[in-house]
Length: 353
Image (cartoon, rainbow, N blue to C red; front, top):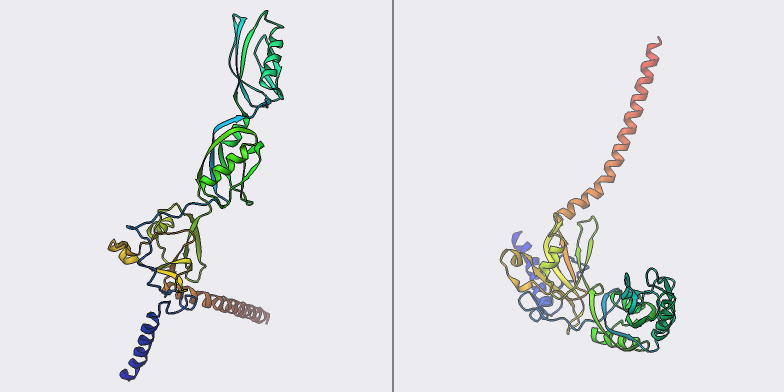
């Protein structure tokens, strides 16, 4: 009997060995989720802990957040003052106890407050030269012969350029009153040129710096099989240095329903047309410090953590048995209630005689 039982096992082993040499997976992972298809051809070339690679040039996509700073934002002449612009004003021959010197902000309403006793002057919509004349006219009501110099300090539009800007769903960033600029699919250098070209419509030789403040569009995923209780999916941004061990640490390690069967599912196909499934030797990685399968993660990678089959079987049995227990419990409760009612009724009837 034992000799006959061994024969099918030998045939199965031979079949598995033959399929393994074909280059693609032994079985589709849908049919055997805990035995991922293995394509050994991609593993030696895959970047890992000690042989990491630099990721391709980053391309901007929604919903990245860009840090844009205005290095040079001088408006084209003739510039007209607006609310929250600032001007540098210096006046001589003022009252001894009321000097006028420093930076003044155009307040809401388009006015500059010169302080007591000079009052306020409306300058919104004026050029710097026109504003100088208006201020001088205002000061002559109090001073005999004021001499003043006025220069543009900072423009409110510069504050709208500088800061964090979300790449919206249509692939643009909004620069306040300067409008929106299309940056989707561009590198940081290309986005810098696009923004500067757009600002050149309003500014004189504008210059900005562009960097990524939040990497929101390039992510990897950690998928944990839930042992019949629902799978979990966690998303983390790719910054170019993450490995499998980093990914597992992001979910605080393996849970009580997880097994040590882990692999990376990488989108796309390799040269042979097979799915890129890269098994991870968890025991070797953690207990022996073997970096061979501590692969570097790329955008779109899925780190799949398979379930513990014993726990999954136990949960499955509980899901099957639990409804039966409820039905039996309700049946027993109903039977007991009927029995007690009948017993109480007979007792009452017997007491009447």
